[in-house]
Image (cartoon, rainbow, N blue to C red; front, side, top):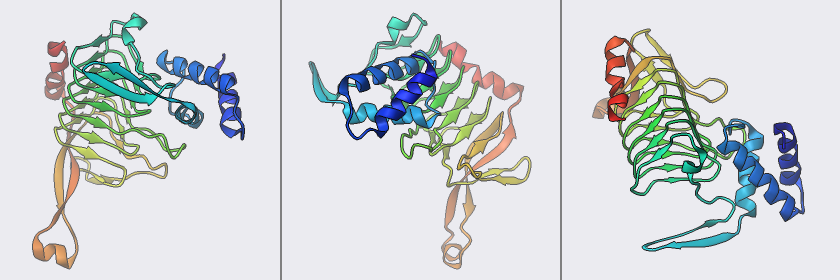
Length: 269
């Protein structure tokens, strides 16, 4: 089924008052396969509608793999990325990749980690231990997601933009990237940086404050180096008590030294 035909079928089924189970499950299977093959991306509202349709039509089933026991919708089981012949490594220890997620050539997933439906992970990206790649998140090639990183997912509202991490970015341990944030190519986030569209980013190099635009997306510039910071809360009550607010800060732009630090990924491989 072509992408345009699949889009039309998903739209028809999602809008129907009475759904033909056979046709709907066939369309859902085609959509999840297209996502896993990288032929469609969950940046389009119709793709998210199809994923929501999979949740809607799925029947709860149980899997017993002693000593583990699971229950989920039968339309969205886990997948075996090893079948794809892309040189993907899923290191033993409790990681799961859900149906409808794409892993590119040479991706490494360290345990335990989770990659949710609709996510896209580009070639040679490293997903370190305790990392969550949320639903529909878009991760570029040669990205390093360090231990404990949380990449927020988004399915509703349908038009909301997913989190995007562009090629060659380095995301330090314990970072949280949420609510439509977009990390530019080659950017470096120090451990503990939290980014959401509601929190402005302060650029000390260029002397400006970056806020989410009209699209609701907070954009970290290419090759920016971001660290956790703080700013004084500007009210009499806050000044009296010395209260400060969290503020992510760009302290420099990436140079040869930070490129060398980011090359740790190759050593880990």
